[in-house]
Length: 265
Image (cartoon, rainbow, N blue to C red; front, side):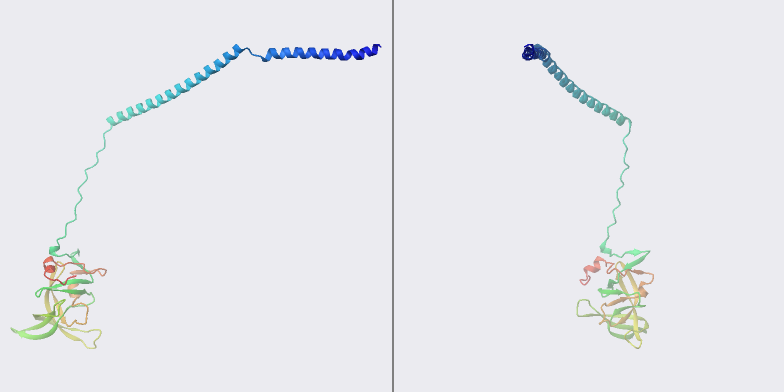
C-alpha cells in the first residue's frame, strides 16, 4: 500500500512545483520588461530635443559657410583693387597708318618693270604712231628683227634717198592706210617654208607698248596668212623688255589711245 501512495502522490507534487516556478517566472518578467509611462515620455522628449539641436547646428554651419565664402570674396577683391592702384596699365604703342598702294593712272598707260625693263606677255597690244592703229603683236625672242604686215610695197627715190611706199591694214576693217618711209637698210630673211632667202626692206617706225614708246626697225612683209599683224623680235626686246611667257596683254596702252581706237582687247 505504501508503494501505491508514492506513485500516486508523485504527480501531484510535480504539478504543484511546476506551477510555482511558472508563477515566479511570470512575475519576474513583468517587473523587468515594463517601463513606466512617465519615463517613456521623457525619453521621447529628449530625442525630439536632440533632433532640433542637430537641425539648428546644421543651419548655423551653412550660414557660417556662406559668410566665410563672402568674406573671402571681399578680401580677394580688396587685394585686386590694391594691386590695380599700384600697377600701371600697359599702353599699347600707337598703330601706324598703313600705307596705301598708289593708284594706277590708266590714262598714262601701264607697264610693269623689273630692273628698268618692261615686262611683256606673249601677246601685247601694239600702237603704230602716225596712222594711229592698234595691232595684236606677237612677242618672239627667237626672231632677230621685228616685222609688220605690209602690202603693195613699192620702192622709189626722193631727194637722192631710197624710200618705200606701202599699205598697212586697218584692224577690223577691209581697208588700208598708205605710208611712205625712208629705207633704213635691207636684210635677207630665210623662211622655214622657203628654199631661198628673201630680201626685205627695213624702215623705222614709232610705236607704243603699254606706256613704253620707242622708234625701232621693222621689216615689211605680207603677213596675210599669219595670226598677228606685228612680230616683236630681239632688236626691240634686247635691253628694253622682259618676256613673261605665262601672260598675255601684261601692259595697257594710254587711255587717250584706247578711246580713239575700238579694236583693243
